[in-house]
Length: 364
Image (cartoon, rainbow, N blue to C red; front, side):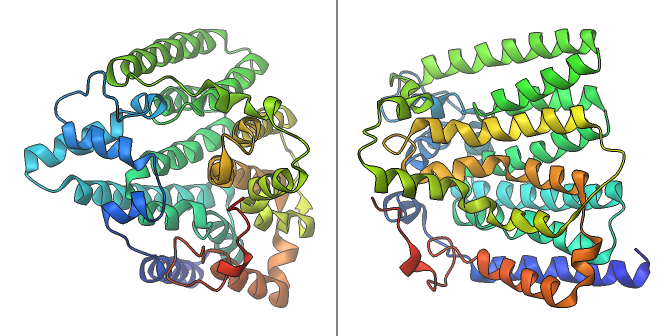
């Protein structure tokens, strides 16, 4: 991009950012949990409230959130020592994470040498997804997910660029944010095996295993709750006679990925490392499969948001495999798509606009 094109691109980033800021539905801590039904927030809130003490055998904190103690504990401890409301610290950390996310998007734009319109398309796909920036601002208690998105971008670009040590570190860090990091571990393991990086593979396995055992132990100390293991295979016990409920559940799972159908108008890139594509695709599919395997009775209407954890990885993969020069040169399709992305971001719960509220079907 030349200087003028960069100015256009950065102006677009500012417009998109302000659009999300001014159209997001801001709620109090109480309303996030009890009105918007973000019930995991009770556990994150409890960890932050007790910090800098570590909760022990707490009956309020659920087990899997107890294993994700690190970020709410740091937030709560910071609030305690700074004598600031910890909900304010959650918001500050959320916005810092969002700026890091934008920086990482721009780094990938430079790595892929995208032109102005391609950069706008790439940024729109990663920024206007309602389950990423808008949701994180709406519910800052889930800031660990925003950090997971940031680390996912680092993970996928370092895999593509074969910076294996950085992807190793990134993979290990994600276990302290979400158990979903197991998918990144599998993907990193595959790519290290393919490239015969045995020493790095041993380091990855050792560091990940130690970290995994640490979070399990932390969960045992923090919570007396049982780990919801049925979330991993609940669909096996689902009553498949409830066909309508299952169809709605599966539709919710794929809903966040609809904008990625733009690849239907793209062309294949040359010089693609097919083994890299396979490793990244396996990682993405595992992240998507995890909430689906929980089934409608366990993953419930969270299936789309949790499956969406794979979205940044899949988006980068799409731009690695495909080029969109022909699509962005078609002004009609390009501008309609970009406007559509802004509309797409208007989730009826997370935004102040309720135009899509009649389309809700997840209260099954």
